[in-house]
Image (cartoon, rainbow, N blue to C red; front, side):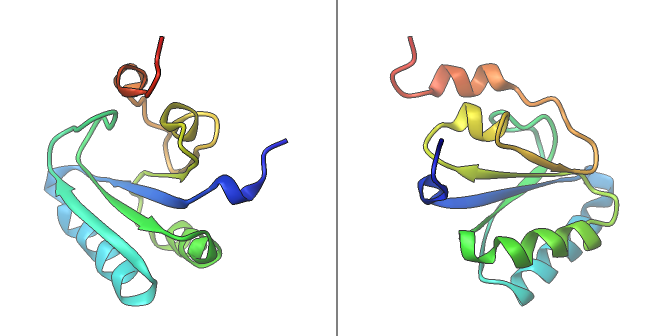
Amino acid sequence: MKENSIITNFHAHVYYDTDIREIAARIREGLGARFEVQLGRWHDNPIGPHPKSMYQVAFSPSEFTQVVPWLMLNREGLDILVHPNTGDDVTDHTAHALWLGTKLDLNIDFLQRIKPNAS
């Protein structure tokens, strides 16, 4: 059994279509104003394992119980991936993932190719 202490932080990936970027911006502003989070860069094109435009929000385990419920209630129809960071990107983005909205198909092959010590 794994201990919660292996979680260094969490990421929320907020996905959006560029024609409704203002909704994503509203959510981003709300997160930044209400919580202790690190707001990542805007990516208006797919990047890494992410199949569509998104930005990342990083937050500590102590913020989880505030950030995730707020996202549940305020996501305005956007799809959001929430995952822990345990040092295993593949498992964190798959088996340990929490989806708000529709589960998108991530490019897991990308994560497997960059995985440290991959065979």
